[in-house]
Length: 102
Image 1 (cartoon, rainbow, N blue to C red):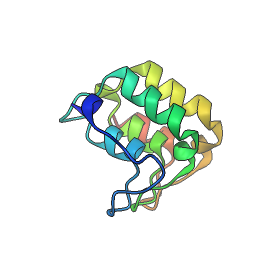
Image 2: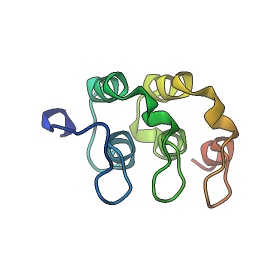
Image 3: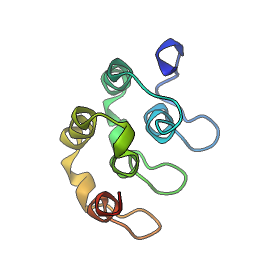
Image 4: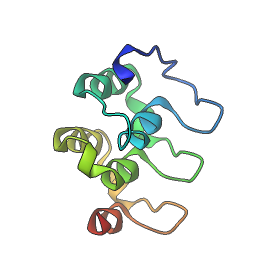
């Protein structure tokens, strides 16, 4: 589980993924406790405005893996940067398109 890991919140992992992206993206196989999202968001609130190597913002990922992420966490990510709903990722989808596919 991610709750026991130490993160460098301000750097990517060498693969273009920041901790918030990594935790959300791996949520389908490695459940994440709510406190982990809160710690990452508290330590580095700008993470919601960072793209991963595929041009996805955390909101894109959170919606993609929404079955495994508590709604409150998706809402927290959205509230931290509502402008994300107007951002496409390189594949061309807006967050709404991603949400409708899930």
